[in-house]
Figure (cartoon, rainbow, N blue to C red):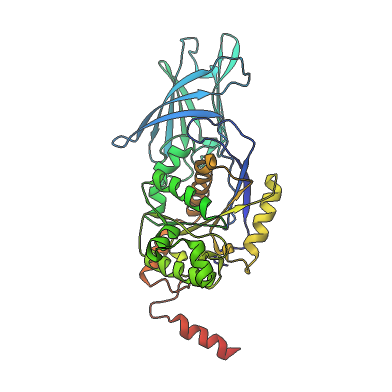
Length: 385
């Protein structure tokens, strides 16, 4: 395997990550190969976020989903600012009933935030999210009233990471991931070519990357569809042809590549991975697991099985069933997992770049010095044996 042997997983419920964040019935599980524990992406809010790149100030409107279906939906205006070592949230108070910070109750944890106020003798929830964009230091949270605004200051756990917004959402992930990826390409692997293509398209559009499909490239080159090619020459020939395509793509940056699934796919073969290591690989794996625990155990088994070529992937996204409408939710899960993967080792993108410059020799993740010859190394192993 190309990475650590321990994996972690969680339940990411399928949902529209942009507008409607109500939990649906088809869960998605995702895990990483580096042992990072992720927090749930369930936000319980709908958001429309506007970005001002010049000032890093965001004027946003959140709509809180009320627990009762008959209760009116409450809208909340806020301003968000990333001030390097801390982030500041300014909530516009609807009335003048709240005059003291004693009337505000802020419950902050590393990755979650709940803000309530006392209004006319009742406690009202203004904002509640289980997934901040990244971790904070809850003990250093400060809040106060500034005229008609409630101001909350949160100390960032990682001062170098720029927050596009207070919550982790599709918009904030796509806006904030460029600083982490540094142009490194992403490869989608798994048994379904169709799923790989649809999720790759969503990721590419969100990140501003170029979407590529090895299936489309191969069919354009061969002037026949993959099924006909397999019947004529066999799956091995198709896999070798895809491997050649991956070699040509390995030096490209800012691309999201959907690979072939199943028997003809190069990613399903242990001897055709040297060029896939040039980017971050995401394994889209369908599962029968019905809960987080079962998905975590399944992911751990799969990632530890060196006989399964897909186990070389850096991120696994477990899918229970499939619907095209879930493409963006799966893309969001993959991007969230990639964010945590890179934050666990910020040198990963630079290491990928070095791997490419040295010729994608197959020595990932333990890159050998310049001049190392994989063929001679293999011969040495055979001689020793």
